[in-house]
Image 1: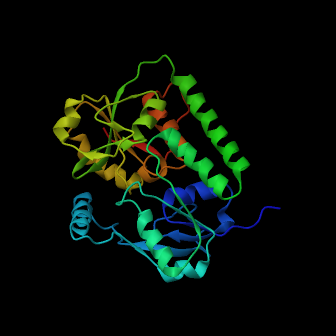
Image 2: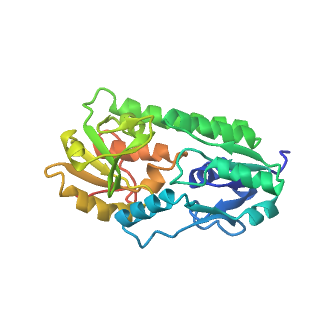
Image 3: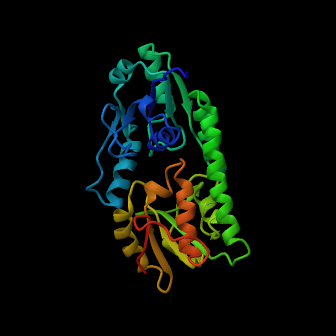
Length: 298
């Protein structure tokens, strides 16, 4: 019988991975943003807090983030005493994006101060393939390598099925807007999602950090499809922003995407994102996406 391991996830995508590996019962600590599955927060102590930005506009959120970073202030608060009380065996963190989660360095300093000897695994993927690799890494460190291998094999099978369905078809030019005020062109694994779905990513930074851009640069890239997938927003939040973006791309198909569920969190659900984007680009070749995944606004 596998020994029970006490897990703490310091980023939502790691929580996604933990549940996908069937380790939800071993998860004792999460962040205030961890919401999958939404009905299973009971018994999970929130060890990382942050500002609730739900009532703020994208421009206000950007200004807040910039002001905090300029002042050398933290965007996230680690509840160190609560973390120590959990006596975790494995902590899942990241150094990928200081805007998205608590950086690993801050965690390490806190653990040293507390004298906590938990194992720390930092998940820092930049490509879709590296995201799948993080699932294997978590499974290995959590003592369930076979589960992780089976999960990744199933995800790769789904990607292969999409590739077979869209293979040989014309690949539309696709721009993904990851933030709208100021506009950010998509980076990291997001261009890989578009390519895997049968599109050609434009105005993008594959395998590199997302970067601010201009609306002129995005329109000059002549996308045939614009996907608005703002980091931190579900489909309802993305839809309102996509409706505003559509005015900048007359005659272009503009879609809102549930960014948190499908695009920006590097976990197993990115494959759901590939399938949903493929349904946008090649609706006659693949099954339709769930109603809560995407919506066309123009």
